[in-house]
Length: 157
Image 1 (cartoon, rainbow, N blue to C red):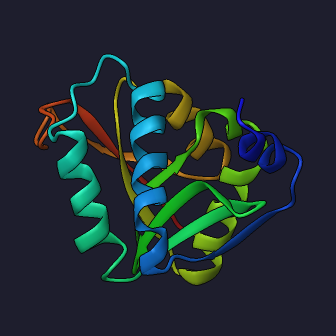
Image 2: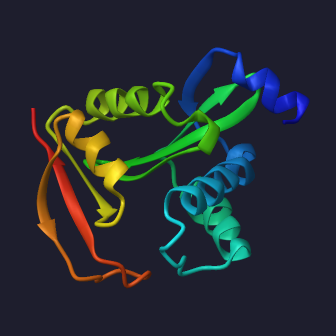
């Protein structure tokens, strides 16, 4: 573990809107989290394409939030209206309440409801979202870039 990672592990976590300067760190969190949580799901894009997408599209259009500890981005969430389109944590930050804080923030910012998609094979994500009051509303047979069956979850207050 690097000194920076060790410092982050004991630091207070702050949630804040992402800036352009966060784009590379946000992409790295996504890549690490995706590969750790979904080792059997083929990513549709290369690492370089993902980094460019986060740099030039995701962070740039707004709606991206980061979780930061000791100056290190340890999580990211993208909220576009009522669509929670991405929520990823650095693998070593799973199970530490950061995801709970992101969901609380999303509910606060979209009090009339939220929806999201997750892969059907991602049972930990299903448990997480169901614990936060989301219910499965729709399933597909893989109508996405990864060609992986997925499920849409919905939260209504």
